[in-house]
Length: 234
Image (tube, rainbow, N blue to C red; front, side, top):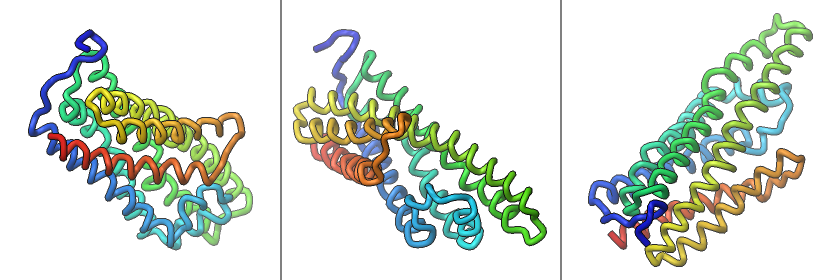
């Protein structure tokens, strides 16, 4: 098929090696964030905790919070150049090639926007909230800011970045994989994408912590399998 929607171009050595390297980097940094944050602030379950619990915890574990979310930010930002190199590694051109780049960049940018609140805003709120001189009214005001910004940035990062953009991006890459004859990675990608997109149901109040966790885990291992598949077929 060589129409304007999908044209198959030769893979480039730089595209393959670059894409594989970045796929592995985002995999390592994502799990790095998990293994730092999970034991220190019970992440990601603690994201649902009220300000009175999570803000003192953020301050108490400030070093781990910074290191963990910095690793998570690197994971998110890595998706931007990865989207460009995946187009080359998969030999894509035309509309499909541009779509892979656009969705990957949007996913990385949206995720990064959501993550940066934990590096810059939340530590400041935690310090102000736990200040011994802070009145109850001050703490209530800080709690409102925390919840409002968490809802906004969380919606952009988790719903738009992870759920929508990364979900659709995964579908497009999976279609490209199937056209290359990579059946297993293609159909596995559809499953990973379906789980990512299912997290969008939280907009209407349908949430499942199990599905949220499973979607992230499956997607990460799908990206690892994609890296191996691209390398083996280069």
